[in-house]
Figure: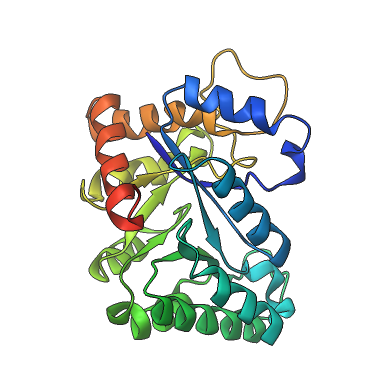
Length: 260
């Protein structure tokens, strides 16, 4: 299994990051792509990747929540990081009209700029979209042919959105949202529509703790060691074995990100 999206630069891991990684490897996670989403987390993600070669990889980008921070300095940082072999994708970038933590125009400007950097660097894009499908799809469509690849991470949208992204040859990242009996039913119904060669799995740790974990943890922090619970729920929805889903999604991750 490969966790293609974990926010291990998050401060909730500062006290026990080594133990978190040890639990991940023990749980059968062979590699983790650590998400960069700000100037600080971009650097931390790269440091983690350098410290754990061929087990941890990094992305570099600016999350739409922080879009007002986009400037020439940050653009230069991301462009520079794109040249590092451990940085396997640019992003997390995209649009989020659900929380609206940044003006829509600022989000669109930062998204377009980062897609341009990904094209220049020849790196895949690691994408975020929530409640912004129309604008997101319109922007992505203009850049998709020039991108070597992309993943719509933490997909939770509609059947129409899924079909639109698949038509653009996007990979689809599935998180512990699929394990949520309250709000994950619609996603479970869509998971079988994802072609086997487009499916990726992720924890989005420390967020989206799978609600299927038994016994339930006393804390609410998600971590890569819980990726098997995501894989099991995906496998159940698809009528496949967990081993098959884990192997196929890992092969997809290696191909998309060019992992060693």
